[in-house]
Structure formats: structure tokens, C-alpha cells
Image (cartoon, rainbow, N blue to C red; front, side, top):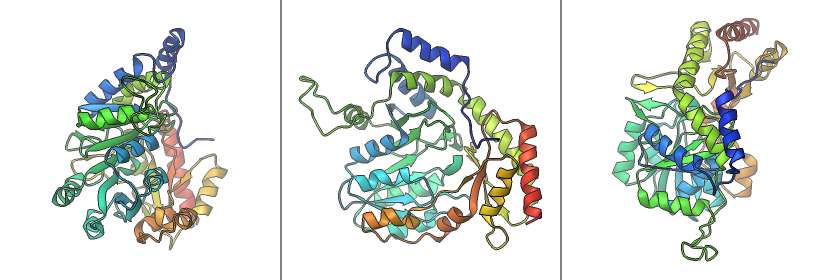
Length: 370
């Protein structure tokens, strides 16, 4: 079975963890790996500060908290994303407003953004989906006109750029994930980038229960235990050093898929606009539902040993969540279409190009016989 993704670990990751274990530096309060990771990530992204946390979802929660998002506030969010982009908003009592996406980039459509801004809008949460940056120049124009801070969800886009500028450096805050299938993988973990020393200090406090500075147990706020462990930070540092090679490999895999599938009718493939660098976190295809049945196609791929993963189900179609929070959000037809008809193919960095060729040819054969 060829899995959708598999972490690319080697001796250096094992050695980094073993050094921490020998020194008993394993928690989020001991060791040098966490501050070193924060410094190195800031340098890589081009931000003044980084704050390491235990997940990408925690990163979004901290970003919202330091922007003082609370009950009744509205946050505009790209509709086509993992629900981890939405849950922290709901958990703070705020209202996520899903913005539909472009059918070619699958990212937030700036043309639909401005019409959804209201007096209750407090922030914009932009997701760089599947490794392709959203149209940040246009989104920044809109955010500046309306004086709205931007949070970037960069969980799937480590190393992605627009005209050489890294995602995570456009908004007020950039949120990253180090989950097992990410381009920088530590199993679990996350990180927030910012140019604001005040926001960075506040996030460092909140991530560790907001302990008091004079009397540790006289807490300064209602904080969280969002600390990253020193062990996860050690792995993430090694992975960060490998990121340029990982991105190069992912791009080669994507180019190989694209070359094999470009002539297949009635499917959409990932794009890369001029000036944008797509890091192809996953290689996703979208089927034309008038011609293909996704469930049948993916079942046939599984029969030949190829694992796939269906596209995200957008917020507007999350019936259980909507019912729980008594919400009837904007409908997002493009995101719903993508949710019904998309899936992604194996694209881990260790995947051989011969295996890519086998998967692509298998998909072509299945589509042709459908």
C-alpha cells in the first residue's frame, strides 16, 4: 500500500531526541531546543518573533486570544480548510464567517471578501491551502482599507512564497503546524510568527498557564497548557534544516504528476500563478462530478494499492457543528463542490518518481474506463 504521506525521518532526528533524553530535557519548560527553534524559524520566515506551541490549532487559538477576539465578534475565514481553522473561533464565542474560494487556486477569493465585512468583523483568517499561498497582495489591500488584522494559517505551506516573501510574514500573525504529515514534521507541534514583541510576550505567557512573574502561582490570566515539548522542538529543528530539500522534492513529485495528468479531461490540477511558489503539501485533484464518481475512483485506486484522502468538508456543510452553535452561515458553493469532488494522491517526500508514474497511470486508466 502506498500511503498518502509518510514522515521523512532519519538518523539526525533520532540523535536530536536522544540528546534531549540523556539530559532529561523533555518538557516544555526545560532545554534549549524550543528557544533555538523559535529563533531559527523567525529567521527562516522573516519575522521578528516566533512562539512554539503544541499544535497548529493551539497556534490559531493564541493568535485569536492576543487579538482579543471574543463573544459576538466575527472572523472572516477561508471556507475550504480543515475545521481546525474554525474551531478556535467558535470556542472563543466568536462567529466564523466562511468566505468562498476560487475554483482554480482553492484559496480564499478576495472578490468575495469585502462584501462580507461588517461592523462586527474583527479579523481575517487566511488559509494557504495545500501549499499554495493565497492572494495576499489583494487581501492585504482590503485589510488595510478596513483596518483588519490578518492571521495566516500556514499549516500546509511551510516554505511557500509570493515574490520571494514567505507565508507567515504577511499578516500580523502566522500559524504553523508540525503535525506528522506536514512539510516540517515533529509528530505534533506548532508555532506562531509575528513582528510584534508585545503579542509574542503575551502568547508566551498564555501558552504556559499565564504563570505570575513574581509569584509563579499567582496567575496573570486564564492561560493554557499549550507548551511544545523540548523533544518535539528538537525534531522540528532538524526538519526545518531539511525543508529546502523537502520542498524541492515535493515540487518534483508534483511536476511529475502534472506532466502525466495534464491531458486528462474533466479534472482540475494544482496551479502555480506567476510569482507564487507552491510547495504542494499534497497533490490534489478535483473531478468534474458530471463525469466521475469520486467514491468509485478512489475505491479503484485502493484496489491497486494506492491510498487517497478525500477533500475537506467546508464549514457551511458541517451540519453537526452548525446545529451545536445555532449558526446558518453563508453558503459557499465552490468550497462545497471541492469538498464533494476532490481527493489527494500520495506525495510524501520519499515517494519515488517511478511510483508517481504508476499512480498517475493507474488513475488515468481508471478514469478512462469510468
